[in-house]
Image (tube, rainbow, N blue to C red; front, side, top):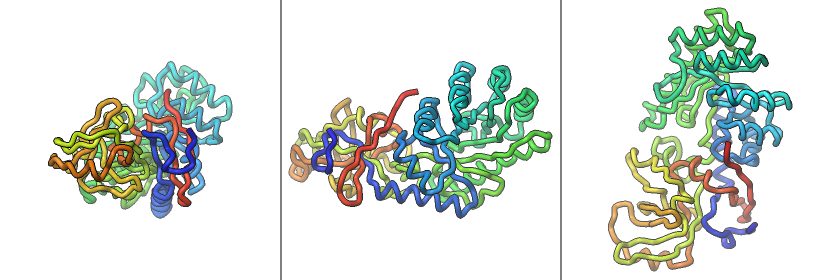
Length: 376
């Protein structure tokens, strides 16, 4: 159903507030311009061509993807400069080359000798970056490891194009203060730059130094030696980013619209038709100072109701209650059956992935429908 206003939307529905979306895009773009680096947004959050087109129009240069399907869909939509920021495996090299044969400027990623040798053995002079571990969070090569130079030499001497180094400070999601965020941003920058300097000192090319996460991008005080920043969730924001301290609830552009389907008066519950199949099972705020359950609740107009959360969820039922657990039978009068609520997500990427499209609330009150995609 292609509803043209909020009142006609079937539920559950993934809503994007267009004004908040544009604010988030412009905020990040202006910050990167002030720091003197390119912004290569990660499109895995929205997986939506219309959103990426707005980022591009604001000044973004290239995109980052997490799947080859993302690369294919965005290339077909006119995006040519694409970094596939997950380490490549041998079984995916042919698909990557097929995209390059069609004109896509696709760059690959490795963090091991095995993967580097597989790229070389493929024999197509593929452009490759080396992933750097700047925080012990996930993947990558330590910046001072001998392995870094060995991988670089395997790629360069074997005929691949050594494009540079990249890192992602995922540990920034565990930061809770501006000082901690700034320190993590500097750690991300300095360690990736250190890796680049070591490659160059060894006589190897390293034109690009790519860093980024939403928390560090919004907290960095200097990006000296960095050529580009990658960030993704900033475009929609979510409650985890709010808990980290880099956005307010009023900047969260994504919400899920649900309809009240029942009540449990003695428990003070309001039941809505948006369960974990709509919100996802991500409980990312559970480890933060404020646990929002499965999401923070807003009225239909988008105003946050302080303290009201989706406390629990079944597959198609969301249980809305006060975060402190007190039973309030007045919620049933406030939100009768058929009334509607919006729920802000813990993790925008996970919640968005539950839906095939967004209902985008425009400034004039109308609704546009922007498709998104899933899969690999």
